[in-house]
Length: 327
Image (cartoon, rainbow, N blue to C red; front, side, top):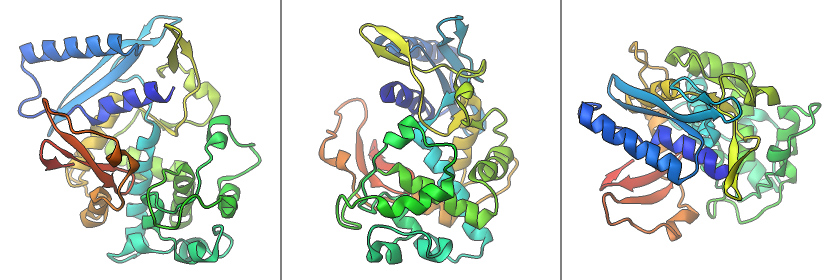
């Protein structure tokens, strides 16, 4: 399941164009490559968005629902998985500026924002953990993700779960190295709720989706959302055939909307109407590697046609060198 979902996300993040978006011959070549890729990797369907500045090209490939034969198009919704984390980071940047935090906003301590009801397994972590620590996955706390996959009882609120972070065991010393931890981003979502005076769901919708014109994007709230007519149904390839599964993640989006989001990120956090939602300096810190990642020890450098070597992790973004440029 994870492989298939991440393949969808990669189509959003890795397909940018240099020069004009396409001439006719290049477009045909791109379509052939994508079609060959989804067949090779047994992906039932995917949506692709390619853009340069204000020009864009979006298209759906394959099937969104194998039972009905409904095809994927540029407006079909996919689960964007952990790309959701970057939306939480962007939302926090907006709210920190509004709450008059200074240029060192990311070093604000969690205890100062949430208060004494929230903490971790030891006093040192409780006292010293900053937003920067949570964003860069360097708390050293274990991340048992069974709850995220199986679901939590509906009677337990996000605030309740965040108060129970004190029971997460230490896996490595504080700030020692990188441990990917979904719970810390749930906690950051609750920080946004405290700063913004509303739910994370409402805040990310009103402060990011709406200003960017992401009209199709929505939050995954209930099981039926996964099987809606606008959604690409999730499948896993097993025993030479595709089987349906339930996805993990919070935001559902389309190629059209994700192009708008990436244009915003790459356009110095300006919307298409010229509005600047976030302090560029505050937002720009997200793309500086805070901590090395485990993948740095295992990823080898490709020799052709490009080189892509991971540097580390910033705030919700992996940072790497691509073709001798830092991205």
